[in-house]
Length: 340
Image (cartoon, rainbow, N blue to C red; front, side, top):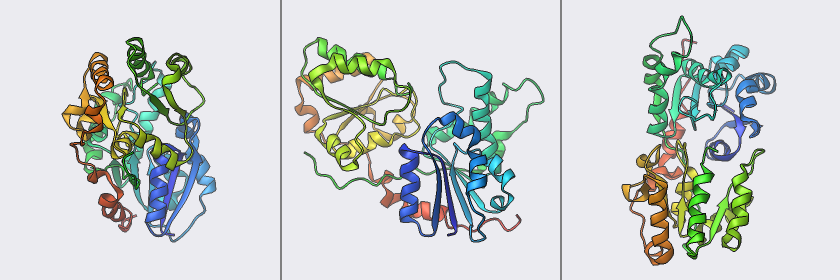
């Protein structure tokens, strides 16, 4: 095995990516930690992998997501420092919203900056993700009270590139941070207006679930079609194929795999006119305020034929594994630096 894949948060899109790479790229070996307690993974995963990744003289490439403190791992395992090190950003902590800024939160963004400094190539899943990270470094480092390092953006930027998250689209035929409060407020207003609709709320359930979810499920009542995690990918895609509209009310999003999967399955997307969405979706699918979202959904409830007959006007192929396969293979086949 010449490619070492390390994922400190093995769930969601993080799992989807490394599973795809292991399946589609030859000579990969994968080491993971479960997708639980993100903050602890960011703090301690390097020590775990130091002990649990066996030494192997055949390794040539190290690929890891930015949850891992790559700097710590390289310091603990000098043998891995000799590899070509690729760091992949699904999200970044410099642009990630926190409910209450505390001094300890500085460490997460700081770790990602350090990891970029020791990586050979830094890959982001969108231009929004890359620019929001790089342009925030200077301001972020000003949180240090004195003796601040300088010019880190200039050092890191030349290593950076954008490589969209590769989606293996299904073979289908048409049949807190995501702001659930605003999402459900809009749906409950539709309910108050006695407009007819059904809703599916799909996704993994983690330890802390906002109260709005249970309250909304009860209030929406018979309008709920599906609720919660569908373990079968086929069932998940079938639920998407049954839907007409897919909605995002995200307060942060660095790519949006689920939205693109839904659009591929025939859904009409409605997304905030912010974050990564203008990079991914044409303007007609973007809204600026909750009021605009409500107005469009009211119209769709009254005239469902508008969305059922609609042909999506954006480009989907560029996000497919078929289109991105070559770039990822190239990323994972370059020889390590000779001077190390």
